[in-house]
Image 1 (tube, rainbow, N blue to C red):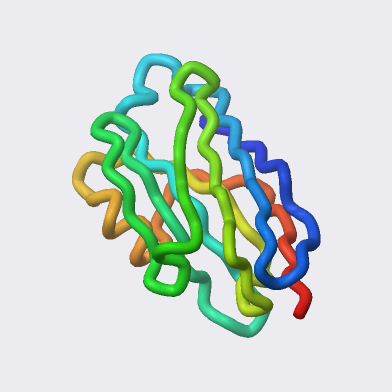
Image 2: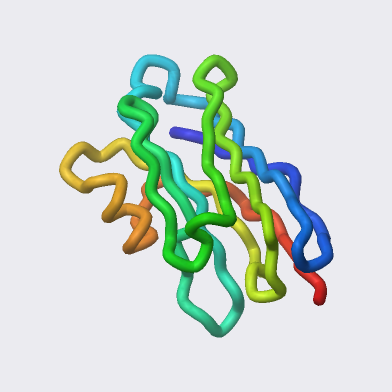
Length: 131
């Protein structure tokens, strides 16, 4: 089992910045480099949307179209923590944000983000962007 704990959400005015963190623990010690970590968001009544993902082993990064150029995903391997830096925020970024992780080798990290197809996810953290 892998446990993901998010932190850092909250409220911000449009144009401002927020930083989300996701700490991974559990069965990740020996296989951490095999994982794809991602962030997705959900607004009730809408489909889940993949925001960003990073493949730990190669450091390859993917972004959803709506956040490209504004959000940045990064990682600290020593802390087994993934971050989402949200800049130039917009009211439409308001959502519940979830950290997610997956180590299946037969599904690409890009596909996992596009399809929001991860094995593990955190409890979610709310982000509100006011206009």
